[in-house]
Image 1 (cartoon, one colour):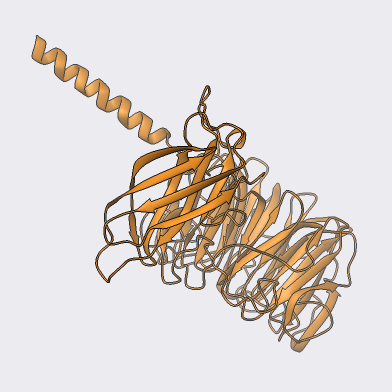
Image 2: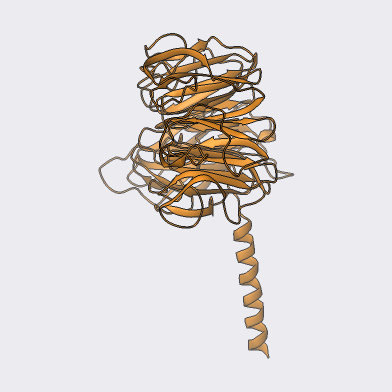
Length: 493
């Protein structure tokens, strides 16, 4: 009986542990970056803060991070002159943003006129597009479109009819042109060589290249003008476009897709699928927001979960693997997603607490984690704080210090790099001494071995009875390492 009871207790404990593990969610440390929306591109990412400033990171060689001379920043940097951003849309090597005053500006590559300012010269910081009353802007591969006063205008590459003005434009179109015949539009999305818009009555209208059925109207042999609704689809509220596929979110929270599904981006659960009219993604309901990019599609669910499907060869599904996924799969560790974006080979989201996470390829630093450029993340990683340095002293009131604590605050280390005395391996353990208001505490710490060397990451309480400290000193010692020390002033967040 005792043995049986022990086994029963052990099973109950294991079940409880599994339940606790399942409930774990990724969380941002105190003082971490906070964004209201995020948009991955080809090898860069941009996001908007609560204060309406825009921040970008990753490949900036063609101005796509909006800062002159920024080549490959691995953490977010402030976009020059950005102070009233409302939303941002990133693509191959440029981005466009809507501003609070309903105007539009773009930055980055412009050889096809995709900056929209009348020029084909690369823009190193945002350039104004001559449009007003804009409620949505979408950046495609080399074509951008904006919804303004219920109509749509596009600029950039029109070689396959994706400008929507009825012409196949060989030369760059560097200023907005009206898409013919569209009124009452509430959303727009642009892919590689096609674009789609949602009308207020729930109809989706697409134009441009019909290859692989990505316009959803059953036509596969001609370049079309807008005006033909997507077949079999009503009640749409938003639309998302990848390179060669399109998906729409309906008012009933289901997702319908069409076009090329060679990597599973249609979510139909079968390989090499194609659909030239809209078909529902099986079993997917309760969707609150939808995004697509490259050959991948992702969605935020109303319960806070996030799912992705399609191309996962760079880890952009976020499920811990490098493989294509034919049907929606949960993004690991995410339970409070608010908004998601998909680039060519990486994806990002912000949570309901405004914490940003990215995963997938980091070839140019586009994950924003500060990690080595060759690092790929198969699961979501927190975008490194652009406010906090490698080590920061935070006041206790802002860090969630345990109730009743008499500590003066928290010393937070974000990949603090330690120098080795010789070329040996990193030690596994070290000693951290924290001093504030004349009091000191010592504690053992774990030292991480990363591609950048020996590092320390974590949050540590300052000594007891050091309340109201305005500065604190840390000293780290370990065998084979040079001692690291510094005095920091309290940072008000």
